[in-house]
Length: 303
Ligand SMILES: NC(=O)c1ccc[n+]([C@@H]2O[C@H](COP(=O)([O-])OP(=O)(O)OC[C@H]3O[C@@H](n4cnc5c(N)ncnc54)[C@H](O)[C@@H]3O)[C@@H](O)[C@H]2O)c1
Ligand SMILES: [Zn+2]
Image (tube, rainbow, N blue to C red; front, side):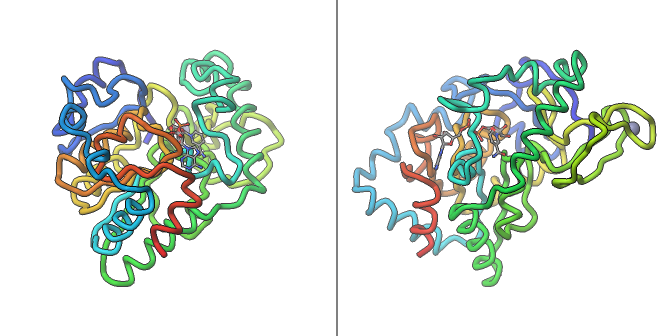
């Protein structure tokens, strides 16, 4: 679908029960609802004793506990973020060296920026796309693919929703990945429904035109302020609401509605594990928060 722009007022209405409704729509925002105590369930968990801290155990003990949760769960849902690809050499979005520390998101990753200077936005995305050509999945991607295959082989269900646009989960062997923010490996028409997978094909003519209507094609990415593809979002929200174990991995948990999946899982009574280099707004709401590199921790959780 063609994403639409929205307002922060729409985001404020995005409560967990609203997110669970079948008619849910997701809007790509960040910073609006950071586990705010007055607006959502996960925040109430923050006000309560810190679940992650109550475990009060060594990291290795927490790893054992998390590994046991993974072994027992028949339905697992995962939210992954840029941190999962960091060890492959793909920059994260925020923080030192992050993509937005050197560029303006408004200028390069918003429909307004594209309308102002489509050529500039295209060139920036095209460079990023071609820069991914020689990037390989890392141990974290491979562990998640392995977990999916193991779980499905014994009749369980596994859903991986990613905010990443780099295609590395699929390259590692994950199937049916829900790409919440689209993919840089495809383009879609800015006016009609035409979409094309381009992978790493070189597009020498510059900004391509739609073969159907002649308008500009653009990266198949959900930009800031745009609506997430509704079918993808609905599937992710359903999986978060139905799983017994939810894992949030390598995400700063501040970009909504993706971060809202954690709240949905908690509200539905799932066990929750976070894997991140550092604390995030979700760290105190999850059952087990593991701090370290995803490429190190995930294989250990499965061994
Ligand atoms: N690879 C990609 O496709 C890519 C790259 C950059 C940003 N994004 C976009 O970022 C936005 C969402 O933000 P986000 O939360 O995914 O990224 P983010 O940059 O906001 O946060 C990255 C998180 O990963 C953690 N992290 C970094 N290295 C890690 C590692 N080795 N192991 C574990 N955790 C690590 C950081 O502490 C941080 O919390 C999305 O819109 C997504 O589309 C995607
Ligand atoms: Zn078109």
